[in-house]
Amino acid sequence: MINNNFAEPNIFYTHHVSYGETDAMGVVYYAEYAHIFERSRTAFSHAMQFPYKEMEKKGIMLPVAELNVKYKKPARYDDVLQVRVAISEWKNASLKFEYEIYDEEFNNILTTGYTIHAITYLQGKAIRIPTWLKEAFSKTI
Image (tube, rainbow, N blue to C red):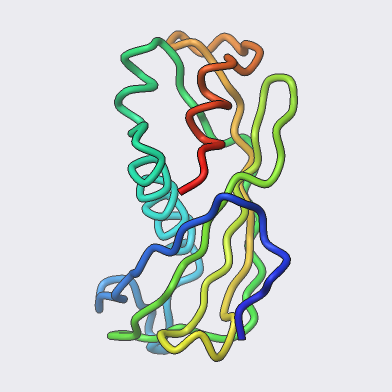
């Protein structure tokens, strides 16, 4: 059952769980969700036709300032996950990505979470969000 109250624009990233992402109990190791979130952000930036390397070429980075994960149901080796990602909040010098991880058939939400990212120059100094960045990530897809 897909949540209809999710930020727009959003995309779904399909992730196939590898054996190395699981723990001794056969479920996705808790820390792997940070990697899955990162992969979905990469897919989001590509869908917006503005990959992360283009941001770096323009002199900015988006370091993670906060990570939140809520585990609802376990994902296991060889599961196919559908990860929904969007930017849900823009502040002066940061933005917030939201995530929902579903099973392959979209019957269950397995995990939810968010990451908050500072906007910085390459040297690490925080800056206000450039207009061009907000425009690039707010396109209708």
